[in-house]
Image 1 (cartoon, helix red, strand yellow):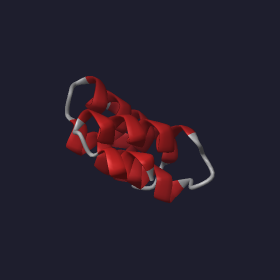
Image 2 (cartoon, rainbow, N blue to C red; image 1 turned 180 degrees about the horizontal axis):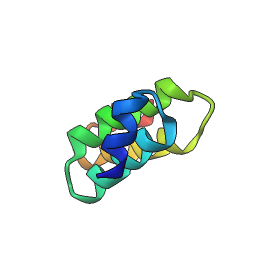
Image 3 (tube, rainbow, N blue to C red; image 1 turned 90 degrees about the horizontal axis):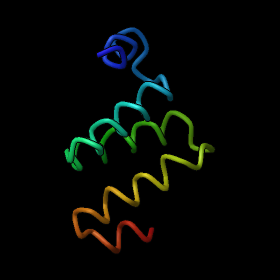
Amino acid sequence: MVYAQILQRNPTHFDALHMRAAVRFALGQHEAAINFFKLAIRAEPRQPVPYSNLGFALHELGRYDEAIE
């Protein structure tokens, strides 16, 4: 996967982290998606989209209080 190659060279690359999270979410791998969304947020805390996507992933796992945060 291209995202993995990018992250090997630059582990804080926002777009690669966010897209890797989105792929994991689409595959139903919500825990992995959550981890990558959090890494993307750490890399670019002013980007709003990963916060929203993180909320969706948490919601899928029934972690509603965390999703609201």
